[in-house]
Image (cartoon, rainbow, N blue to C red; front, side, top):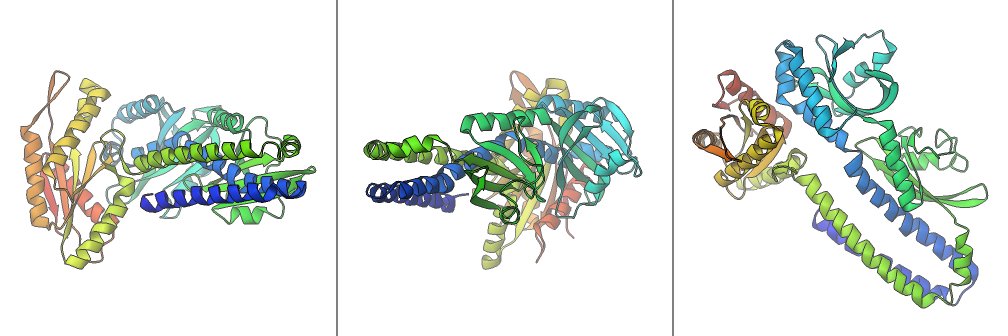
Length: 486
């Protein structure tokens, strides 16, 4: 999002305004049929897509949260370190899973180790995954996902309670060298998701449901009376292929003698399609019968809707831009936007023949801070830490919260030597600084891995080298800066 999205929104509003005004002027002198067709076009091209956009924006907040949580768990240094340490003291991981479940209000949280095949749950070790057990097929399916796919969304019975159906986000976990070491994730109760769908249907007076990439209906409200797939839905047999091969589409079709308007949109994080339908309401006849007398009022209402739509779209757009690029707790950039910043810096570096380096920084023993003072104090320490890092950086440097207590700093125009000097300054600054939070005096240290970008090196490889250096710094006793020269 950015200027292009803002310009596209303005173009859409202006184009919609012109189309509606022209349509009302033309239909004032023509027959009922033209008026009815115009209203149908409004529903199909304007009202329903706008409703779909609003629902999609709410899904970004309500349903994509488990994916974000699972991603954080998969990248958590504690989880990977604990697994690589031969899974000693399982109660630590179980306590971690319980904290995740309580903090984010999920119905379950889990981790399955590739080495031991133990299924760790917030209540304990539930079982060992077996390749001959049908109920465990999900694990081997996730393990065999393509390299480009790091997670799947799956609806299945909860291993901890077989009577409950849960929407699982299963996320692959890799060690610091990119080797697969297990699967972690959280679950969201199907009943909760259904209640969200019911809320959307009541709020917008539309039928809302989800399908997978094959057209199978995956989630719907309790009042859903349609078929189990798009291919077997009455009136949609010939449209299902077009829906499933397009990221977004708008159609109308006949069902039981009524016109149904359908808007579909792919939710890429879930790999599901959001389907929003609206039937041709009987009240439209009354509306058209009084259309001529209410022309002036209709124009005023239309302008009001456009004004409100403009405000609503702008608010959602700004909110989504902040959500997509900024870490909510610290205000630093989040890891989702790092690739964009990195590409910009790399393009500039090629033009100016200048270097690029990164620092991967992790707060030492941060879990002790949370355990000793609580997560609230831990969050305040992270905020203070972010402010300290900002003060040590230049305007062109990019600070990203990489996950948990881990930060990544992108340093355009800085070679390995200068980056190492800056890393040492940051390490010393934090080591010497005593953080005062709510009357508490907390001393922390950091370990830092440093790497300089090499010719034709992908961002992932650069980060892995910095991550390896960070791991070496921790292994060497923490509160150190380690360089990766390779």
